[in-house]
Length: 99
Length: 191
Image (cartoon, rainbow over all chains, first blue to last red; front, side, top):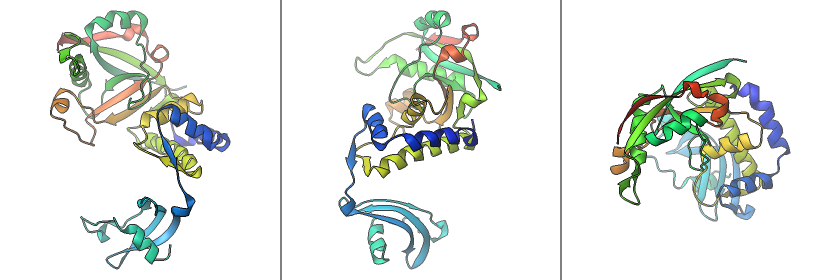
């Protein structure tokens, strides 16, 4: 099975299925979801991040200021990262860089 | 149509063999299964599948609640699984992982677009496969993957790792992919 053989069928399904249908299917399996409040979410895209004044490539994701939960997908340049780098304050970096 | 044959090994209570040989495997439906609903077999891959099936049968015999073995003797059943390549999702290959990730991202994108997120826990890979099958947009009969599975020592000493120690397959509808003629005992013994 290769993606090229099944991609159209997958796309067709997700083009027509509603968000609620997907949520319901997962809920029937025991999953629980919560709403994301837009007032507290900052969607970010292509933001420059710096670590110890060195550029860290591009990030995409969101920061939830209500819970401080940070889901950011970072394409890091490994050589720039200290082994024990702490990204706990990454959302503050985003603010300071005008995201 | 391009068929492939996989030799699988399934460890279980020896009392089950006669029924399996006569009526074929009875697929289990479970939310926690790694590769979705189906009968699970150990196959050639990162470690010895016969040994894994034996270890699984022995580990599964123990009932933690009662503190006893639920069966005393086990069998390792060998079976041939025949599947068309177009219905075989192989998560031990980059091609297979690419499909799974595409699928997973589609589900996640949909959920995120509804401004929802999981309250607790995490998504189960097997559920993604089950939902793709249930909604008829992926015709998957057999799924293969590498997993870290806990046998007796790992359960007793609570040893966990992320690097896989087994290669397994899940056969969703054994009657489609397994001819009972090929079902035989590979090994048997006491737990």
